[in-house]
Image 1 (cartoon, protein in one colour):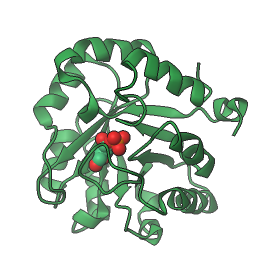
Image 2 (cartoon, rainbow, N blue to C red):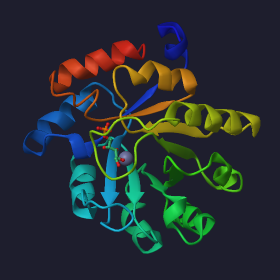
Image 3 (cartoon, helix red, strand yellow):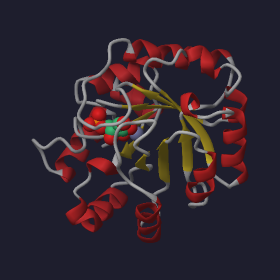
Image 4 (cartoon, protein in one colour):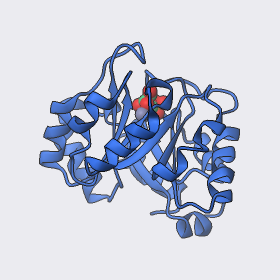
Length: 230
Ligand code: DX5
Ligand code: ZN
């Protein structure tokens, strides 16, 4: 995809906050806002659906209180419904559940919308795309996970790129304007291939925006050049 094509299809950036430097978060948020990132990606883990704990409601409240960048909340939570009202009230928020972890995914998506947020789903790498068929009318974003949920810094799972393409074709065939996000090992090498496959929003973590080989400002410029936004 040429820079002109990706510029035409403005690729969105959602920095993964679990990868941020918490000790200089204010400075980082100012830079991200100044440079126009689209969302802040918030990984919520419950220690059950995934074997890890990360961020929570208080962190989201502090972020939303300081920054106007909309929250892109990724709920890796078993039976998410009781927690949806906690997260879906942030202005302009998107809340994605894992259909694998919800008893009644359509009910959960409708609850997210009723609480004022954009409903989405995040698919575990092992989950077939077919799962989306009856969910598509109820959602605005699909997050294709290209690593097993639960940790930053993992390598792309085989089949991840092909799955992005399958989701893009399904969404296109249904004629729906559903945002396709990719999450997991969104690296300098993988980004062009993920966009080529159909990704529109990039969750940027340790293998690009928070790549320790560079600083945040330099990595963001590099990312923007790569996606035709600089
Ligand atoms: C993993 C999370 C990701 C993670 C990505 O379960 O959903 O958002 O932060 O980190 P990297 O980019 O390092 O794979
Ligand atoms: Zn995530």
